[in-house]
Length: 559
Image 1 (cartoon, helix red, strand yellow):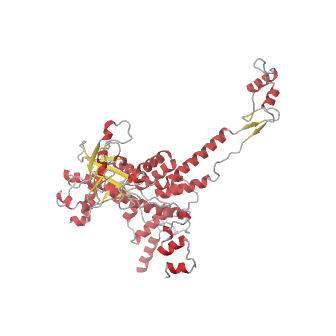
Image 2 (cartoon, helix red, strand yellow):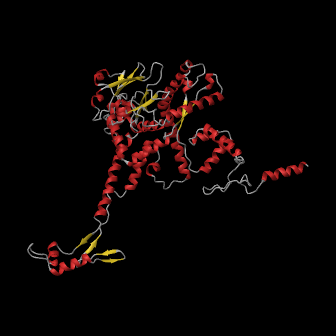
């Protein structure tokens, strides 16, 4: 490749444009150039991600909460996300590794049934004793924590122990993330081992949190807001004492950022345009009719015989006429007829809109908001026009992957440590038995405390088609019945128990077992309509009692 000097000599005086010379000498990509108009003035720093205050965390979080409280679109988008990922009734599905505990699958199912039943009673206690403030059930706590995780970027909770009449003393107190901060007297010590109220070990792992006793903006907290408590991340036995979850975008990041950060500007723009449209409609409704007169004000006064001063009375004839029409208005089919003066006319102003492209603009902004929140545009706007089965199915598939990924991350980081802390107390109390004794709980803690969480179901666009698809997948061995049940948000163990109870109850009442050998008609493959098998025609092909006919035919041939 020719050297830069050779290029210069080929141009006579050796002059080259600065941009070309820079590219030739350094070989930089276009993304690193500064001479392009699109990159002019765009020189962001490679800032350190471990200090949230450097990028205005308080401002971003405050604006996110304001949008949630005052913007219906944002509020709806957050609600759709929360109810799809967590819901209000998320349930534990204990998954101990029985192989490592020297037990079989039958033992595992019996053990998990006992654990899940006890956890369900604790989490849905009618006195809400699982909540330190005694306001919410465990499912509602999880829902509120996930809302904060999406809107604020962080979710935090202290795991406490208080005797409240329950054998298990575990309870949870949600902590708003702004209460986690370094005390003023320790600000000078901030560094690799203390940042934004979080203490770290030599490897950067969180070992404790400084939590302000009161909210910094509470006007009535008194001296309590000036007191900070140090809460260790784990107790002496390794039991979680404080859980803090956020979704990092960089390795050194120690605080989360709101999912709304990227769309705050367009969302605020939409808010302003929306108000302008409503104000324009309101003004148009209030000033809907005008009376257009051919003369000036003096002409009208002269025509009406207006007095020159207060001492002169109005023309008696005009006064009598106006009083008569006021007392005897003319109505035609319920509509009042008003009498105008000569040459007067009614003028209706046309409604003017600040932005004739408002619907398209609103759709564009809401699509950006939906993409940032991980929900679909129709979910936020409730505009389902133009959605057919194929597009709805594709949309549901994309959303479902996002929901599952976020559910797994949040529950494993936030809910599973709470479950492990609860289970440790159950084992210590002797209410839950561990193979090898209570001491083995600490040796095999991970194997014992592994869990999944069952949230809201996947939903269906066309239940018939999707049920048939599940049946085909299960018959081919590519999918289990358990997986299909979990996709509907149900616990397979509960479904099986209900099926067994229903079967026994039907037999007890002298009813036949349910017929599950029913297939839909082949049909013409269209989206509309669906046939089904009957008791006479099991496979729905229009030929009744085929199995019985085949059996009789085979008996006749054998005879």
